[in-house]
Length: 123
Image (cartoon, rainbow, N blue to C red; front, side, top):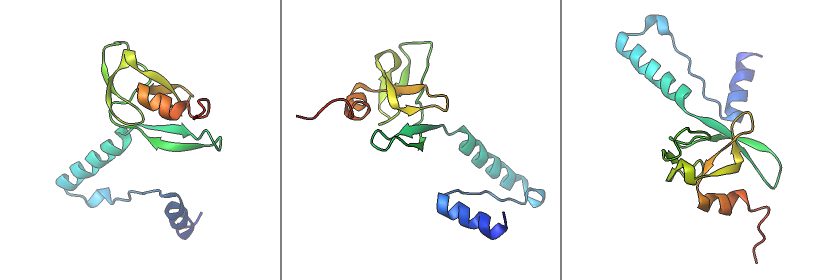
């Protein structure tokens, strides 16, 4: 793939490439760069299943979202709305999944509003 083809691909798919000449960086610039990389790598991503199309898309999780905890009383974030909930009172999402297919913890409201919309008929 040529440089032009790579640039076109990145623009079409919303890919951001960080290209840095680290050999000529100042210490302060290096710290900023590695903080940026740490933030990017630490952000959690999942897959969101579209119930209508049957396709998956990448999904950025809110901070604190999880699919497993040892402590049922731990405060976590709903994987859909980000609201703070207790892990033990959460539901398992059918549509927001990790790369292996495990559902993330979701609040009751989001579960019934989004995860079951293909099952629950509006009447």
